[in-house]
Amino acid sequence: MSRPVIKTWLTPPPANPVKHVIIIGAGIAGASTAYALAKRGIEVTVLDAAEAASGASGNHQGLLYAKITAADTAQNQLLRLAFPFALSHLQHHFPDKAFWDDCGLFQWAFDDKEYQHQQKLLQSHYIAIENWQNCTAQRSSIWQEQQGLWWPQGAWVSPPLWVQALLQHPNIHVHTHQKVHHFDWQHPQWQVHTNNDCFQASHLIICSGNHSDVFTQTQCLNLRRIRGQVAYADSHAAIHIPHAITGQHYLTPAFQNRHTFGASFVFNDEDIQFRVAEHQHNLNGLQQLSPQLADVCATQQIQGRASIRADSIDHLPILGPLSDARAMQHTYAKLSQDKHYLIEAKCPYYPNLWINTAHGTRGMVTAPICAESLARRLCQETDILPQPLQDALHPNRLPIRQLIYGQSAF
Image (spheres, rainbow, N blue to C red):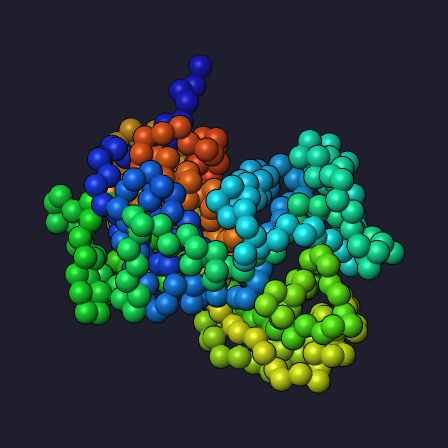
């Protein structure tokens, strides 16, 4: 009988007492992680190079729903857990709905390929789909003539206001305009050096989106950048959009007298300047979703913003403890010749260094559950994610993949 493969790079590092945590990044991933720790009584310092929610979490509104397919992939498994968790989080902690609304969402089958995907999903007999689809809320007559999926619990959220609400916890201390240049371990704590200060803590967590791989300890992640531009339209008394809608583009109900619609996707582009051509792209999409609002919007002053999302090579978030990738190249060198080679050496983890990043376009859905998972692990509680998903999101999957396929990590 063959021996089972021991993947020591997935074995958790030793657990150390959590005295104080520094989080780099004040977007939805950083704020969710800070909140998950703070509510457990842990003091958290959050550092951001600009203002909170100034990056990809800065859009006026975004959509919250489970954009899943019938395939049994790690991404779908994560989304099936993440959506109800995020929704429950909002309902429990922010029941006044000051910055969100589970108004329902219509996922439009805009072409035959999308229609077939949706039919396969409905036929997969996934129990949560049946529960969501059979919810009593009904979609507006606006979309009754269109084919697609109706998500009664689909929601819109204002990410900046969500982030601000999370960071209000008394155990969280936010320092903006603190650009982190480097950090180093000086036992028994991390020293984090910014443009004008130095912070210390027993644990360090990186949640800085597309800036997460700029440090010496994270260069091996090789994140992919995706530029996205959204547009805004002032609400109009004669136009009522009661539910969110998504297809090739998306449109939200009005919040603070403004609709959000979009968005563009430009790979490997880190420019955040507003582009008229992408605004026209978004207007064309709005014309498909609400011709009346598109006509009104065309007469208004152009409004919108662009930001950069971070994505991993396999489109999964990166969540877990970080290792010294250069040391891993030596420890696991034999895997470059035989990916099944048995290596029992301990993984060279950095002490108390963790990461929660690369949520791509689904950050509002996946960041909260990933934050909860990370907090539970640090506090030695039972993880909310099953072990196979923990392994699928583990940061070490990336340097190991690079070793096996002969790719350079640096």
